Image (tube, rainbow, N blue to C red):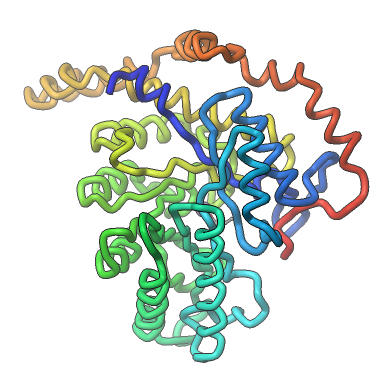
Length: 384
Ligand code: LRH
Ligand code: MN
């Protein structure tokens, strides 16, 4: 695949929840014009695809995006040039899940959690989605609170039951996270734990790398290289952070890290559609306007991808094999230090898009229109 092919075929999935209100435990600042239902979220996501051309699908979160007729929602999306993507389960907000969901000591609570996961598979059947993404907030806050081993047994049992329920091309994507909301153990805290569970489950179980879910200083591109080598990288939840799971715009806090990650994706064949890697955003625009925030984020992924695609692999390999440390590093830095914005602007023009998506969206009047139209009703959020 040439670098231009990689950019032309790029598909970045947007999170429906990025268009709703979000915040921290301290405050959720509502914004005017925010969607009131999944249909309006989809309409906003379609604006990002309209101006970037590379955001053709929207990930849903259940129950935040539960509707009576998912067929109607899929049709609504199609009319706007996008499709429904990954289904995200939510076993982190029900009062019964305080001590865990599928890992809870009580079998009745585990059964309730599993029922929700099965409901999400039913939603996939209705939307035609390929991926079920599972992130578990399950964990403990104090040593001795529960058996680490027993919780893993419960987790494995639940994952096997969900995996059994999948059909056709459907996949289970297991997302890990170091901590929060649990602060002593998290039952799927790192790539190794997710990988072990996925290997035991089978071919259609893959790992999701959320770039905000690692201990500070973690070399995420090493994890990406390893998972690609094992054929177990299923998806990314892209965002960036300065400290913890900040869910800031991807590439905003550490554009060099994003470049290094996408360089390993390229080396590992991850840009080949056959690798079936889902490139998703998972972000919260707590203080910035949400649609432009998503457009900027998509452009950040495009720019990092374009830079990664510019790396002269032959020169890099030659320098590496010659033990030319500075030479090899220079090959990578040359690509990273290349201004790819003109290249991307030309590619957009070639595709009949405005070379400057942010300016084009601002001129469209959509932002003003939704503020005027979306009066009354309950703004969408995390419903916590
Ligand atoms: C957990 C997470 C997960 C989603 C949620 C919105 O921190 O990254 O991917 O379910 O954010
Ligand atoms: Mn995530």
